[in-house]
Amino acid sequence: MSRPLFGSHSATIVGPALAVRISEIAETPELPPTTQSEGPCHHSRMRPEKLCGVWWARLAELRAAHLELLDTDERRRRAGFARAADRDRFTLGAALLRLAAGAHLGIPARRVPVRRRCPHCRGPHGRPTLPGEPLHLSVTHAGDLVGVAVTAAGPVGLDVEQEVELDWRRLARRIQAPGEADPIRSRAGFLRCWTRKESVLKATGDGLRVPMSEVAIGPGPTLLRYRSRVRPPAHLTDLPAPPGYAAALTVLAPAPPRVTAEAAGGLLIDRAICEKTRVREGRRMVTGHPAGGG
Image (cartoon, rainbow, N blue to C red; front, top):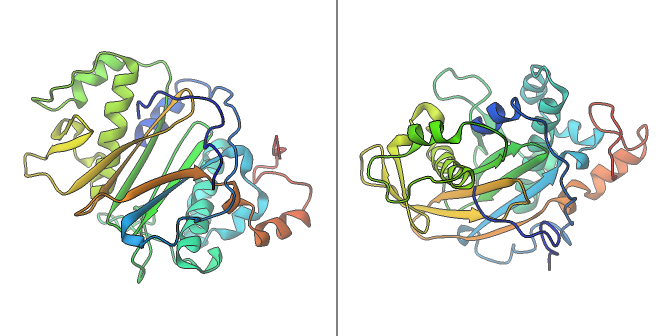
């Protein structure tokens, strides 16, 4: 059985394009370390179409050996990030995605065939897919927190945001849908609304090409309306998050899957990764900085 995901810290559930913009406004605060899972995919005896697994990791868990899990396109995309922190978030997300999918499929992470293709420009930056495999994937990051979701239930969208100073009242007027019964009255309420809608847009594959004001969320949370059409069969979940963060998940499926969330330590320190890490120079991050708590 997994130990608590975020230790003994309680979190008020309030809810990645926003994460990128917000991260440029304020410094990332120090957060308490996560506790690690006993091991990957301990729910795998369930029918896969009834399960959605979510894994969370901290940037301090990144190791040099994780970079070797990236393919050529991912390495090229990683090199395009100007800031070291952005390169680390991308590397950790790509590695964790392969490790989590490999745990579901029962194959080594290096053999997981992740593909990213934008449906509009055909560039290697679309949402991740697994050609020939019945799994749906989503990746998100904010601050020093990186998350992935893996499920066979249906298309999935995962979003995490970090609380920072911003004009949430002005943004709230832009993202609320006409007729939404739950007005945004606080910063926490704004993040709750944003993460729910962002997770829906990631699950549908539309992303921020669709204005959030065209996504109507009701109590539960539930998806009431999408782009003025009858809503798709969407199941929304507010996820536990550490203090200062908010997270939400959407799965498009006929029936709601069982959602499980855990720290990714058991995946990130699998035997192959650990063996490669021990023979390299120290336990250093991809950027060359000490790995902190190790």
